[in-house]
Image (cartoon, rainbow, N blue to C red; front, top):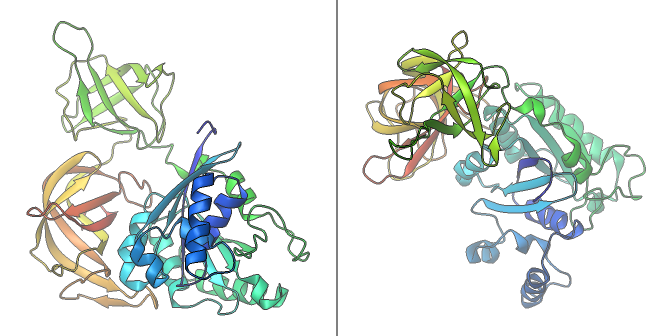
Length: 419
């Protein structure tokens, strides 16, 4: 992909709202499908007795998904236009797969929520809007789908728009963009359609190509979690600290602080995959070379002396519990993986549980079960270098891992470094 930038987006919606069909239409109309792929789904559609090619089969790749007619797992697809490259996460609509949507949307810069023009805003629509808000997805598009089945009626579209806008007013969410589409026929997906002359906005693809991404990263607070120390051997005069920039802008000559030691030094060189770079910013992966020979290891943080992250062992966070093997209860001991640092964490307190449909908070629950979302207080075995998730998604997010199975059991967002 030679496009200048990459947009990661997630699609969500109720069952049979057309998420997979929409992605298939995007790939098909943007000519991003190989001939053998098209032949395969044409054969599969014929085997199912369907009269036309079912573009949803491009993403519903699991046999169980095809048999049930639903999306189960997160399906990732990639395509590019001359303006931008795209990574699409097709996430499930069922409530029992909430964890899958959290996974798909956690790294997305934009979420597309599909709403059936006939049904309007339903329970899953509200749940997905809440999850997109919780995960701080910067951009939200509401695609009012199946407009062909309501005769491309403007009143049906405006009814969905007004209903969703009223619910979104309860959330901490940026103003969504509304686009009426027919994924089945391609109306307003890649090209504007004459079937809805009353709609004056862009097609979905045009919006995806032009939505601004520069403001989606924290460019204020310099952060580099150290992933690897590069020192070929003692005979080479090279010592670098590799990692992905999590915030701010770093340049040679900048003064920085190393955490946890608290020692300060300056950046002498910044190396990228193709050689030296003049500045580094999210989400670039770089190697920093420093003036002082510090004792730096994986999991440490390089920041600005006057703008350092919080250093704490006590976290207040919102988590999504992702395992059916056992519920989460106070006293549970897990591994926490935050940026490049791993520690042991104990759940000290369950603060609340959120009903993602009604937004009601159940105060002081005894447990959290599979796909439930709630607030917790954690105590870690060693300090973490954190920011609130609302300020920095990279330094404010973490996962919890079962020590015995090494399975990821929760995804978390730091609301406050201290309880």
